Amino acid sequence: MSAVSARPVPARRPTFAWRALLALGIFFVLALAFPFLPLGDRREFLLQIGFFTLVAGIMALSWDLLARSGQVSLAHAAFYGLGAYGYALLLKAGVPWGAAMPLAALTAGFVSLLLGGVTMRLSGMYFAIATLAFTEVVRTVIQNLPESVAGGANGLLVPALLGGNSRGQYLLALALLLLTVGVSLAVRLSKLHHAFAAIRQGEETARVLGVNVVRYKLAAFFLSSVLAALAGVLYAGKTFFISPLDTFSLANSISPLTTSIFGGLYTTLGPILGATVLRVAEELLHNTVKNGYLVVYGLVLMLSILWLPRGIVGLWRRGRQGGDL
Amino acid sequence: MNETRPEQSRPDGLKQDATTQARAGQELVIEHLAAGYGKVQVLWDVSVRVGPGEFVAMIGANGAGKTTTLRAVSGVVKPTGGRIQLGGRDITRAAPSEVVALGLGHVPEGRELFAMMTVRENLELGAAMRPEARAAQQDTLEQVYRLFPRLQERSKQMAGTLSGGEQQMVAVGRALMGLPSILVVDEPSLGLSPLMTQTVFEALKVVNAEGVSVLLVEQNVGLSLRLAHRAYVLENGQVVKEGTGEALLADPGVRAAYLAL
Image 1 (tube, each protein chain N blue to C red):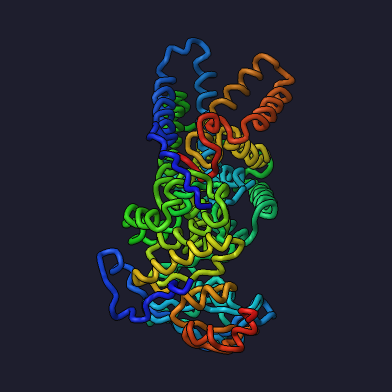
Image 2 (image 1 turned 45 degrees about the vertical axis):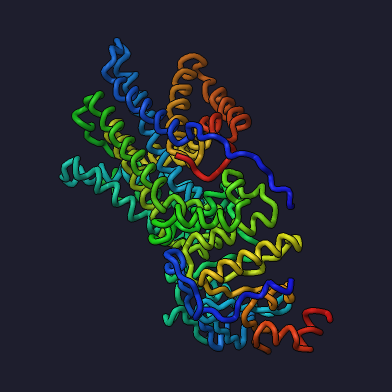
């Protein structure tokens, strides 16, 4: 043990953080330019794909925020759905859309605190199953409300966002993704980052290090669910029709998870890159392979998780789980 | 090994500079503490006092209640009886986060590092939860690196890849990053080579010499008694003996039970 290694400290090279920020900057510039490009006669279609890519980005990144605190949730569809239904019902009650949007998101946020409180002592698989059950409970409740209130199993019509202006809708989604990125970076740079990382890796130890585990777990739930609900609002306003089965579908809980893993867990860039690559790949496959596209899509996902266990951003990031930018 | 005993004249003759001022030792008073896990009572009557700037050891066999006492001090285990005071404030029922905020640093048994984070990130975590520690983070980090130069060399390495001794250094360093005025250290020699144990104990001595109170729990009785100003012997959840390290080292009962002499 006495042989102290005389290895020199490596010279400073551009860190992952700076490259990640650069990549995020490029992403937003390109995404902002996209709706102003001459997209030809497929413009509406392309803008729609772009819109849902952004929504998928919000879903994945907000899911990742919660995962950073060690809470691997299958309740994201619930918050997405609460956002969508909350928004639709508030509009129905005559609330202007600009107010309905944050109100629906905050409602989902407060509901998430209830779930977070109940699941506080659960971890791993038990936590995941509890959140899955929660989604079913919320869906069942919404479905069984009087049809005059929430439309029952038939669903609800929702007025189109921004009068159906595709470019406006796209830009609104981009703004909300930017908000999500802002929250994610703020978490990364604040003590929330340390608290989440400690809780994720060992709750007991986090506690003796002075982390108020209850408070930070609930904070993760609140932030994550508010942002997921905003994604749900976008969805409702874009498709102008929501139903319990579609909105609360398991796919809406699973895909943020796979997207984040595919892109790179516990990072800001990873979930966004993951959403972009997966949505575009999905559309391309849909158009080329036609009916069997989901099989190919699943295969691509499986292989990439085998070969890229740390996701796309893991390609230029050292083997670590500390949570980079 | 004869010279490892710190000066007995402190804390009166304590030299103070800017950094030690922030860490002026606090007094910890444990009175008639009782605690347990569910229906299993582990502590029956533990009274321990750590004066400001004092180095106190708690020794005893496996299951005597040493770790549980520390966990009760940290707020992880809720006492069923007795009283704990830190710097004059009652912390008997305080949450761990409140106890840390009052200046207690805990080096847990088994080190409990975050294996997939770098050494530096592990250290930063120790400062994250106290605003004053976060503000002083850079300075404290340099102090920790001075105390354990090995950690600076390893700063970008995953904590899980370090040797046991290096991991123990990180665990001590992480606690120091929170600028504690009292450090409670649980079984730091566990699984370490005698040489590494010596290194870690030397570091604790330095920290204590800077004014930080230390409460050390150890099974390495000989080394602890030589290092500590005073010590307590725990048996079956009760304090059965107390005295200066010297006196306990000379005590026939202690020698027979713990030093096999």
